[in-house]
Length: 342
Image (cartoon, rainbow, N blue to C red; front, side):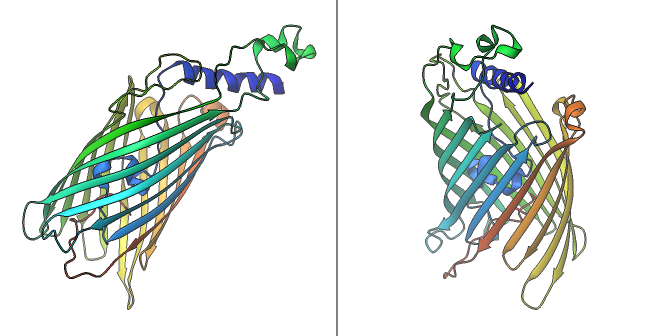
């Protein structure tokens, strides 16, 4: 049975390698903004932002898939830019699929310029670009193949594999770009609309020496931040992603409660989202913010056909964000950030 399980996992890996691949993504997309849109570089409520996120998925049916992301972005040249914002940043995302046999690491440098359309910092339009390098590796040692069961299940022979394996790792350079529009109406409602394209150059991606190109990924996002009362906010948002005929629609909202203390503001957040494409998962999230630190947690409840194996158990994510301020003569901030707890 163990060998059959290993073969099944290998079949999933090989099917992924023989088809145009799809990208790493997080349920808490707002906690790893540079993976959503390069133009989100520099869009934060302070001068700089440091973020880290961890995802653990499918531990109920196999060795869990684990993804870790870390990013840092900062506004620069603030004394020279009166109504505009220029941000730069970097991000590292690493993913281990299954028992760690398939590993993907993305290193990204990002920059964005946001043009202020008025003197009150109520309207911005921005353009962002990212240069990236991706390294993929696959440890073929210990994997089982159908040819090793040629003599039957009880006569498994690890030395009989006849698979033609060309290489165990490769890397490639990549390019992403995005645009972002932000508006605030009377400091009560904030809008953030974005469009981004990843893998503009469609790099080759194959362990088997094939001419398999990574398809471009298109992302449309909309976020709204509504001040209902002095203490209560609602943040509905929506993202739609398309890559090589694969689609993902994610919509939901977070409810925030703000309490002003003597030293800082305390914010508690509770939200829910639904990944509608293929009826994949319902997502619940919770977050706390105090004195520049934000801690968030999310859990996926599996609602797809895989539910029979997972019993609804999908994956969980944990994220921490720190937003700092460097005092200068002029501090230029974007408008209200509509994505919850970003």
